[in-house]
Length: 626
Image (cartoon, rainbow, N blue to C red; front, side, top):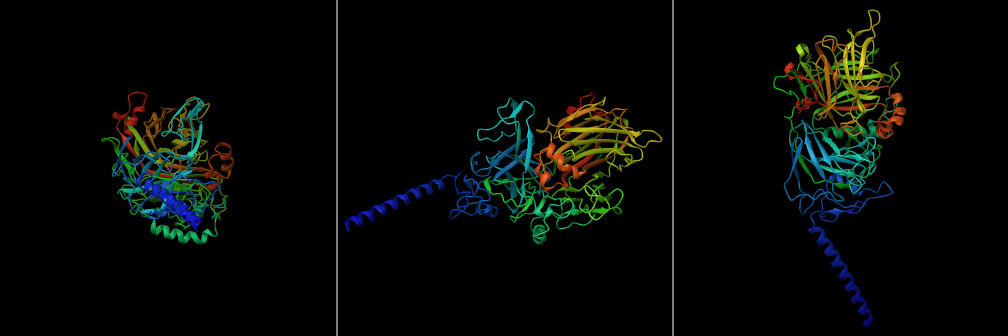
């Protein structure tokens, strides 16, 4: 009996010791602001008393992969002490960050550190410090946590003989830096450390949260198409997508969506990278397989952001004339309407947008699938989905056409008397040899009818075209027909074509590493300045190229402008991408038959002759770029 009492006493002492250790650990965690509300990522339950954000439910789903991360992460909210809210005031180019509570800890496992926020008219760009082992990032508004936007992948190239500077945790320094040698990698295929969040066209402050994930965000299954431009997932998604999209339209659309009336707006909206995904969320810019269910491995503090609706690119000077500028904030009052019917021979259509307003546009489609190609104004910016033609059910073969979608403002430009034109646009400029964007100019009274420079270009065969490709920009001038009997345009490519006597290269790799923009659904700004004899192109405020215009310059003084999206013969795109851009799985595997672009802050102005630089160096025109 005495021996039994000793054993019982020892057992009680052991239990008391375990309880004391557990209590000590609990007190330690509750006293540590950085560790308050921690939970594991291995599917364990959230500690009692912790209220998690609805979107964090994905943390408790069964592990999708054989490996799992167990780094802790602060919960979005806590019943004891609320997470600090970061208030950011953007002063370009410096971002001033202030805290409404105690400073949030610096980068550590389980925490996404926001390095800065840059505001635009109806969006913000959020820069984050890379998180080890993160495969993607996403951002959402606390007021609507079931709508998320993913960062997606970027492909960065430090250049020959260079390598990127890496931090001790194996992630790259931000902003990216390169140095001679091979101490770090030359190529980075990483989730973008910058996300552009739209949905700020209400002009009000919003509270956002950024999360790091263990897998790429999914593409919406109902948006994927086959080579025949039919839904790739007709079942079971066809039964669920309509209900999900109806719910999304009621719960997540913060503005009226004005869409092309070419064929209405089908529920499936093929080619759009916004829609319901298998995890029950409305996902934007997912670039992974449609059935991905990424799990959260780290999260930021809530950050308070505001747009800058008064930060307008135009006019760039008080003496500018003929100013046209559209920030696409009035979708409800700028309807899109067809102008005539579909032209079967050109696989084209013409539409108007905002007719009779100060933001009147003409939208011209050529060589497209007129069933699925469309333009829409949504969340303070313009989007287009471009399928190269023909159309399903027509006599034209699919995905073999020279497709273009051009946006032309009603305002024209005046280049007489030595005046200078300035065109500006923001667009996501990650491109390939078959998917790209550009500027076009023609005589004001002789609009373009063929954007690929053929004999049907226009009546006069006169145009200027500046196009943006991976690594470089090209410039082409056409001054008229070859002869009275040969209507082929007589022109010269004076940027970017080997063998031309006037050749200068318009390299873009000096702007962003690898020269291919900021990433999908993350806009870059382009500015084109020109007189009749000279032009200069800027990307994100940096000079890409400048030169004289050959053959005596532009043969016209008043000009009509076009902001153009091109897609060329996607049937051959798969082989081209595998050879030249094998990292571009998004186009190879998810959206091989269409291309989506996001535009904002498009416009033009005429500047007086006194604004033209006196010499041949126009690089300081960057001062005119707000």
